[in-house]
Image (cartoon, rainbow, N blue to C red; front, side, top):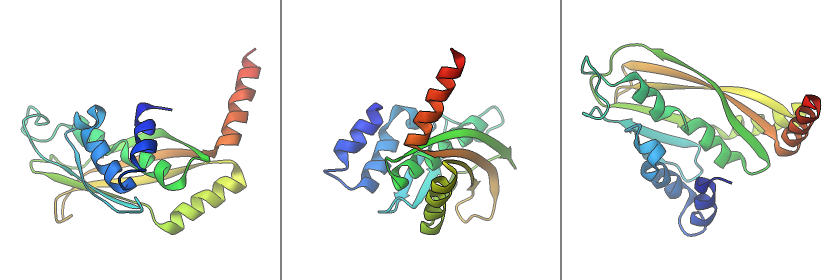
Length: 177
């Protein structure tokens, strides 16, 4: 269990899971370095909004937001969001990412991360049926009014039952012997 998981387990007893998610991310050193900030987190964690302000900390040689800042500001959210939505019976890992830079971002940018209840139930049903699945979540980094897309990030996320994942790892270990 990571330090973040321990804080979440204890902290969620005293403040809402949504507030803990928002302030936990915004205060954690790994996320602060991205210069992104979560601005809204719904009570059920199904909808999250992020702002990445243009600043001296993320401005590149040509005065736009550094591509690494664009990616790192959105990278952890879909996986951690899903972990907190579907519960402890599942293993959830980032498997891969594709980043498509559309145009230079020379203003504050925004992103939204959404799971629907139907999508969560479908993920659980697919994992129940197949033991493990991969899903793709796409995030668009846009202007405030969403009229300009600066970057598109596609994350492939692996989801399995903990029991299946343990058995799979055990089989791999035995095969290596």
